[in-house]
Amino acid sequence: MDTHTEILSKSFEGDLKRLCILFEGELARQEKVYSICCAQGRAARVNDVDALDAHTRELVALMEEVFESEQERLPVLQHIVSYYQLSEENHTLSELIAVVPNLWQRRLQAFQKNIKNVLAKTQLEVRGNQSYMLQASKRMEETIATSLQQDEQPAEGYAHDGTEAVKPGQRPAVLNALG
Image 1 (cartoon, rainbow, N blue to C red):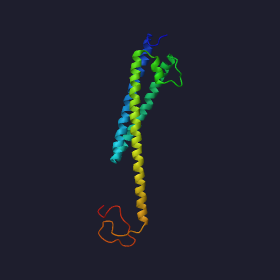
Image 2 (image 1 turned 45 degrees about the horizontal axis):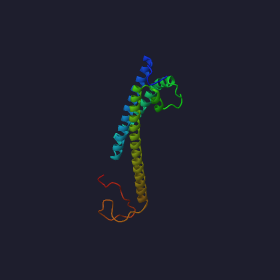
Image 3 (image 1 turned 135 degrees about the vertical axis):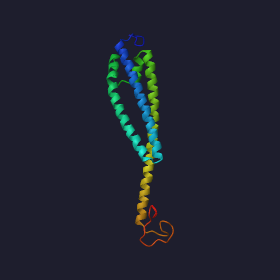
Image 4 (image 1 turned 120 degrees about the vertical axis):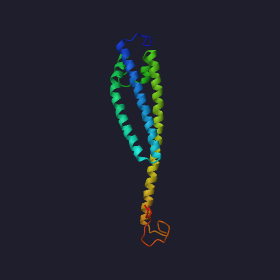
């Protein structure tokens, strides 16, 4: 049977259409994930903790949507995989694209290309954010360690505000008297 020219039953055609619609929804969600990851990176780089927290909450809610949509998509995909007698366990989108009619091939290929692109961009953004956050964390730890070392050493020279000689036992302050 030539699967590229076969006449599909209306219900099966509906399954392919539904799958494409669900994939398009997933693409939109993944594009939003990318956008939020970019916003998280910007917030982290300007030390905007409130925005960083808000973006993290957005991501958590969006990931819940991703998991819910997968539950909606799986039965449709399983029906199509079963129809084309593809492996139930290890089927790929490329394998599915190879057996569906041309109209659906084009839609699925477009989805495959776009989802690969957005996932690659998201992965790069997440890696960049992770690298920045690790560096910032390391700098913070070094700053704290330096501060603790200064607290243990007797202060020498001028006072924290630079106006008078330090008296023995006086420790440098992080903030001046004005706060």
